[in-house]
Image (tube, rainbow, N blue to C red; front, side, top):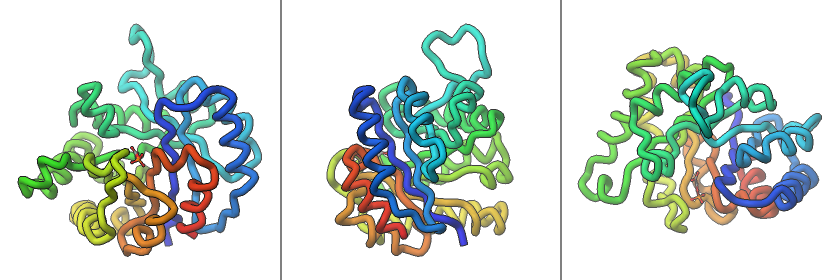
Length: 250
Ligand code: PGA
C-alpha cells in the first residue's frame, strides 16, 4: 500500500515569523497515521528555519523549485545539492506557475526532474491542462505530452523515485476544484501511461491532486482509487485547514 502524500506548497507567502508560527501550529496539531506523509514546501529563504523546527518530527521538508544545473554562474538559482544540504527530501518541478510565468517548457522541467534525482531528492512533477485545453478536448494529450517529456529523457524507471501531481491550471487558486471524477479520470490515465512502461512502478507511484484542495473537498477527492494525496496551496497556509486535509487523508 502506497502511503498518502499531503504536501503544502506555500508559494511566495509568509514572513519569517508567520512561517515559524505555521510550522509550530502544524506540528502541534498533527496526528499522523503510518499511512500518511506530510510535506511542507516553504520559500527557499525559510528552509533553514523550517528544517530546524521540523527536526525530530515526522513532517518532511521540500522545496518549490530547483535549478537544472549542478552549480556555477546561474545567478539567483538554487541547486539540488543545496536543497539536500538543508534536509529537503522532495522538490516540486514544473508547477504551472513556473511553466506559465517563468516560461519553463517541458524540456527544462525534465532537466529539473533529473537534477533533483541526481541530488537524491524526490521530484514532484506537476502536470495539468489549461481551461482552454480542456475545453478543446485536449486534456489527455496535454497530460501525456508532459509525462512523456520526462520519461523520454529520464526513463520510466526514474518514476520509481518520484511523485506526480495533477494540477489542472483552471483549478489552481481559483476555488474551482476538479470534481473527484474529473481528477480520477486523469489520474487513471497517468497510472495507465506509467503502467505501459512498468507495472510495478505504476502501482507504487503516488499520484496526487492539486487545485483548490480544502478541508471541505479533500475527503471525496482522496477516496478516489488513483488519488494518493494532495498538493495544497492556499489552504496549506492555515494550520487548521491544512491539518483537516491531512486528517482526511488518514
Ligand atoms: P491551490 O494551489 O491549492 O491554492 O489551488 C495548488 C498549487 O498550486 O499547488
